[in-house]
Length: 258
Image (cartoon, rainbow, N blue to C red; front, side, top):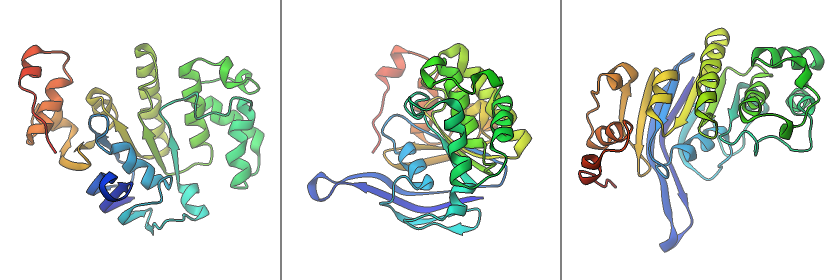
């Protein structure tokens, strides 16, 4: 469903150039949930934005649903792929009602029966019709993220890109959103790419993951192997150790990779 080969992204020029992504390659099968994991600045969100068409300055080769991607994307591309962003408040227009927010992609992609589709989308993310004419500031963080998911889902794309979809939420709400995403994937046979720095989030939602450091993929590993603490690369082992919480010995043993 998704194939990325030798993806390279550089910001700036000359002495100030930053190679944010360096030769990243991976493939995601139809219906699979694939994770990109790494510390802040590792390049994982930059990869996701390039796949989504939000970053047009890249080199390499990418295909989505069999379509080779260029700098400009077709309408069919945006009907097949949608993205959920990290900040559920910043990604929703503050002066638009939920009805407007959910109706906009239907208008852009010329879907009929907007009212029924909006009500069904709200139901699928666990919200009643009473939320339809509220504004984003009248909703909690978890409810706003449910609206963001409904907006991505409303045109029935087979692929969803998830950029840290729970990191801005309270811990008590994170599990609800993850379980919602897991259910939607099962019911709609969705293909996911999930970006996160949290290994527990990835282990809950993904089948496989790629661990990134300094713009490169250092290791691909299955979630079962991750749970058994079987990563091979030293950075992967270090990341897994750090995910268990603060440990003075882990800090003392910290290595830098580039």
